[in-house]
Length: 188
Length: 188
DNA sequence: TTAAACTACATTGAGTTAGTAGGAATTAAA
DNA sequence: TTTAATTCCTACTAACTCAATGTAGTTTAA
Image 1 (tube, rainbow over the protein chains, first blue to last red):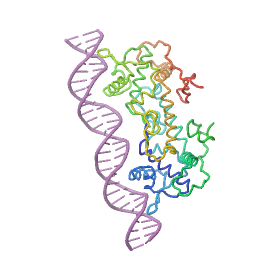
Image 2: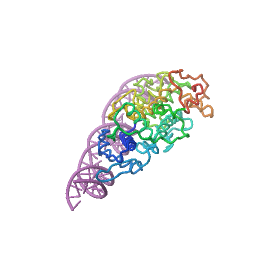
Image 3: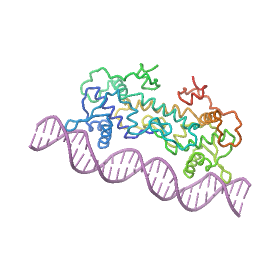
């Protein structure tokens, strides 16, 4: 059930860009992201390329260039990022919503493994498709401010801007977990 | 978030052995399992070997030999099988309970990715550590009986033996999902 | 004695992962 | 107009994992 390093790095970089946006920093260079997150710079370059092609981020080339989010952070779900880098969320193909694949078992409708893995896939998707970059950014910043940790991407003591909150999505039921506890208004 | 083929095959084989036990069949040969589930036989042999070494199954060598579960099906959690074959359930090492590993991020306590992935790991473990082989076997047999599908590993029309139910585990909260819906007494 | 099963271990081809390398193109500023 | 800093593009690769396959046993019931 692993997330690849590539996927992890992509998420870290995007979260950083989300923080940068929130903190008022217009552009961030790959070198800075790589240094902050201890990611090999050339590897991260490739990843940023991919994220750009898929429309998650935009770039400014040339000196003092860099990257920024191409959309508001609350329009980028974590699930869409993970799917791009690591493929379907489902543990096995026959329970994937976005990339169904018939499995080898003789009778799919009576397959206990399939029922079980469908629950797992729904649990995973229930979290990753529910939360957006904005959620993760907000939780991170909230924790940092609470603990008086200096915010990244800002030399100033981080003027408290009104955070861009995740759009209400009543179609999705709340989920138990740390994040939802940190968002009391998300709970039932 | 993939389950490997090896892991899938191991689960299929163990579920089959659980069904066999439930249906009164003392031993099942690798060849029969491989044929039923369309698994390459030599590959499955390896897997059975491993499952035996780890105490999930026992073997009877020689002609008319085969495999059977080494413990009651309700004492074998799905999570323990997946961990054996595919390693920790956690998407990243820094949220694994059974195999914690420090990650590269500079500040783990303020890492938004970590908080998110902790939720994911808990969601996965909440399912896979909650359900046992007995649960999956029971759901499978129930569905098959409901649909009048002939049960595997039994020529006779499958005398309805009292099923070995999963021991009550009040420490674990119920989980939403297909399986728990099929076990009404598991719901709150 | 023989056939059917498990046991043990070696090998392998394809693909994936996690990078590394080198330079071309672009841009802002000096 | 030059220079430095940045993204962009393409190729390469070592190591590892996955998913088997192969070969040669050993054990046991009939």
